[in-house]
Amino acid sequence: MHPTDSLFMKIARKITLPFIIDIYNTIFGFRGDYKSWEDAVRDSVGYDSDIILSKVLDSSLKVVNGKAAYERDSVTFERIQYSWPLLAGLLWIASCNNNRLNIVDYGGSLGSSYRQNKVFLKHLQELRWSIVEQEKFVRCGKEHFENGHLKFYDDLKTCCLENQPDAILFSGVIQYLEKPYALLEEVLSFNFDFLIFDRTTFIESGEDRLAIQKVKPTIYGASYPAWFFNREKFLSFLARDYELVAEFDALAGVIRIGNRYGNDKGFIFSRRNN
Image 1 (tube, rainbow, N blue to C red):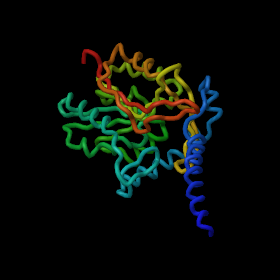
Image 2: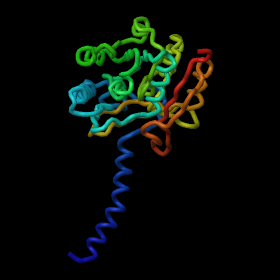
Image 3: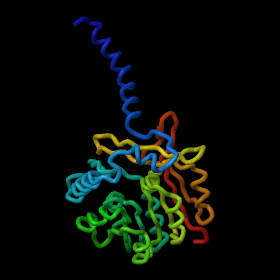
Image 4: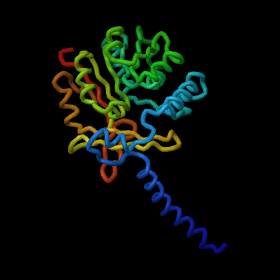
C-alpha cells in the first residue's frame, strides 16, 4: 500500500461519515408537512401495529426481571436515563400533597416512566400511578405489571372516577394523537391540580405542523403522524386555567423536520387558585 493511501482513507472517512449520518437522519426521523391526519396516516406504515406492543412488552419484562435497567419506546438501557425536570416536578407535586402522589400517566405504555422514577418515589406516604392506554396495552399491563401502586385503564373518565388523581402526565404522547386539543379540552374538565408535559415537540413560529416520524429499523419498522405544536398557541390554550411553573428542554433537544427545526420541550403547570 502506498503511504498516502492511508491518509486518503482518513480524509475520505471524515468527509463521507457526516454525509452518511446526514442522509440517515433525513431518511429516519421527522419529515413532511401534511394538511390532514388522514393524509399522514396514508403515508404511514405499521401504525398501531402489534409488533410495537410485542417489543415494548419484551423490553419491559427485561427491566422487571433485572435484565435491563430501563426501557424507553421498546429500547433497553444499561443505566436509567432520567428526565430530572420531570422527576423534580413529581416530587414537587408530592410535597404539595402531604408527601402523596396520585397521577395519571396518559399514554404511559406499560409503565416506562413509573419504573424510571420509582426509586425516588418509593418513600412517599402514598403512590398511585394510573396509566391510560390503548385497550391492548391495558390488557397486557394488567396481566404482567399491575401492582398496588400501578394500575391500567382504557379511558380517562373511569380512571379519574376511581382514583381522583391530582395530576396528569403526558410524556412523549400528546403529539401522536389525531386531535390533541380536543383531549386537552377534556383534561381541563377534570380540574387536575397539576399538568406535566415531557418530550413534546414544538415549533417557534407558524401553524401547528403535522409531520411523519419514521422510526429507525433498529427499534421497530414503523412510521406514524406526529404534531409539532406552535409553542405560543399551546401555552395560550392552557393559560386561562393553569399557571406555567417551569419550562425545560427535553431529551431530543433540537429536532430536524425536513429543512426546518423544532424543539423537544417540557412544561409543568399548576392550576390557578390551587
